[in-house]
Image (tube, rainbow over all chains, first blue to last red):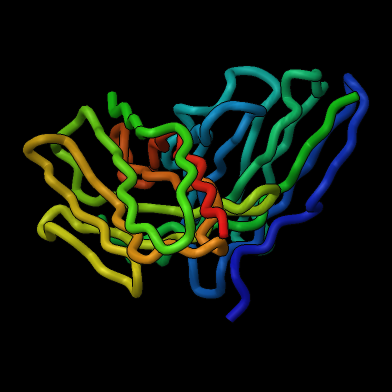
Length: 116
Length: 113
């Protein structure tokens, strides 16, 4: 059973370009979470999605950031017009469809975004 | 709003020592708490999840406890090994959706031979 997969593992973009980060949850998981880890800072929640629905986006910056989890295919975190401050490690996690209070979140290896 | 604090920020011990990592949280209405390990440049590995109805969980040399009334959790590592060197993170649910985890800043553990 493959774990949570993220690609690319490393992404370099110039200021003003778009970044697309992909996350494939563990098999059978229908809940996806995105977190960001800025240099020298802790992990911060960004968004929680279920298939075709955004459940909680309270951690998403108001502009330039969007996320989706379509019925088919991976979850996508999209950052438009990237700036240097977007350089960070972006982690995706998934959990089972039970949505229970005791469900462990399983994390992917992360995508390290560098904005030049 | 849930806030999670971990102390110490860094810890260096000789191999073989038993050690305790501390985590405190502000919202006592916590329904579970997770401990993770993060190796440099890598993702997070879930170590233990303690449900609110439990007081502790054990896995091998690891034991985690949860005291909701005091807002504290501890991770006990027995007979530490150099391979235990990593950053240890605790996380509790925060916000209105239970899927949202609030992380502490982590404890950087170094176990030297």
